[in-house]
Amino acid sequence: VRVSHAGISLVAALFVGLMSWNVSSAADASAESREAAPAPDEIIVRAKALEKLRLEITRAEEDVYARFNEINSTDRYDVHCYERVRIGSHIKQRICLSNAWREYERAIAEATVRGFTEGVAGGDSALAQASHANQLATEQRVKKEMNELAHSDPALRAAVMHLGQAYQAEELMTGLRP
Image (cartoon, rainbow, N blue to C red; front, side, top):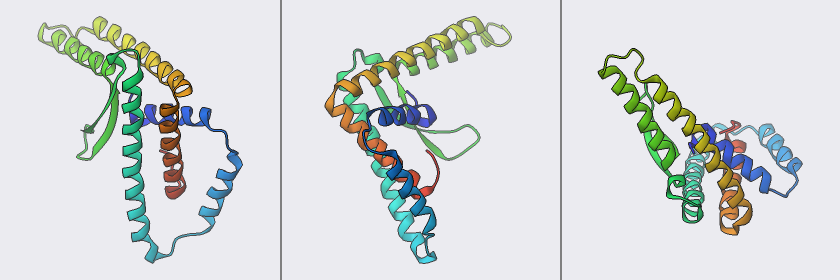
């Protein structure tokens, strides 16, 4: 599970699936927040509030993954978060990956390097492609298990709900979807 966009969409889908309150109230709140433009002296206060909210999101993500890691069926499905610098950037990005994703990522990289060192153009592409296909299939199983557990485990369900609410608050505050 990668948090970048896929993890957020997974948690968002879980949140929407678990949510039982009226969506129109959130739309009304969003419309009200857009109508009231912040005064210039509120920018610093809002920036601090946004920083605090993003810290809350990080903590909520950690709670979701900690509970999921406790109750899932295999350690390969455990999710851990890291900060990585994106290629072509100096800005760190938080990314959350399952152990299985990282195993397949390593296998893909090794196949590519092995192919280059053995003189095969493009690396060992058949092995890399097979590893990537396995990687994607395994991630679907991780997502399916997380979804099932979020519906059956009250603690995970509560953690997902809290994270979803934090994402909604960020969206309302910034006007941007995560």
